[in-house]
Image (tube, rainbow, N blue to C red; front, side, top):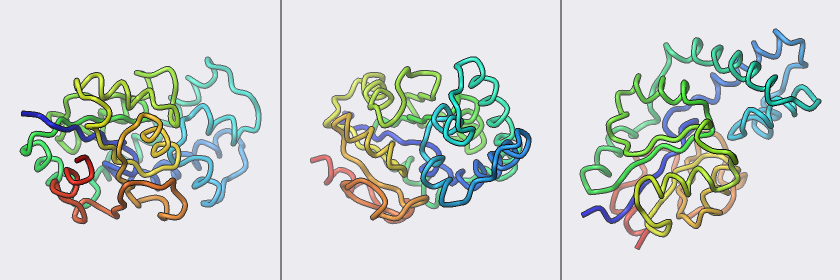
Length: 219
C-alpha cells in the first residue's frame, strides 16, 4: 500500500543544471545587449526563479506576456542546446528514486522550468516512468514561492499534503513546499544551508539519505 509521496523539483535537484542556465543566460543577454550578470547576481535573481521575474530583473523594465513568451523560448532553446550533451543526475539520484518506488512511494516532478526542459532531462536520464505526476511551468498559474505546483502534485498523486515530502534547492522552492504544508529536504547543490529557509533536513546529494530517513521525517 502506498503510504507516502516524494516530490522533486528539477533544476538543482534532479540535475545540476544551474551552471548551464547561467551559460545560456550569458549568451542570451549578450544577444540583447543586456549588462552581464555576476555569479552573485545569478544566485540572488536567477536560480530557482521563474523566467518572468528573471527577465524583468535583468532587462530592468516590465515585460509583457507576449514578449516574455518570445524571450523565454529563445533563452530556453539556448539552454537545451548547451545542456543536451551534459545531462546527468545528481549523485545517487536514480538509485534513490528506484528505492523509493520499490518501497511504495509515489513520485512526482514539480518544476518551474518549461515542459521542453523537463522532457529533455527525464528522457535523457530515462527516469520518466518512475514518476506518476510531472508538472512544469505551463501547468500552473502561480509560480513558486506560491504552493500551487506542490498542491497540484499532491492532488495528482491522490495524497494528502502531510504524507508528501519535497526535495528542493532554492529559497522560493523551499518556501513553496512549506507553504503547501509539506516536509522539505533541502538539496545543497546551489546554495549553502544558511542561505535557505529552515528545512527538515539537508543533503548535498542522494548518497546522504535513505528511504528510512525519509519515512522517519514523515512519521
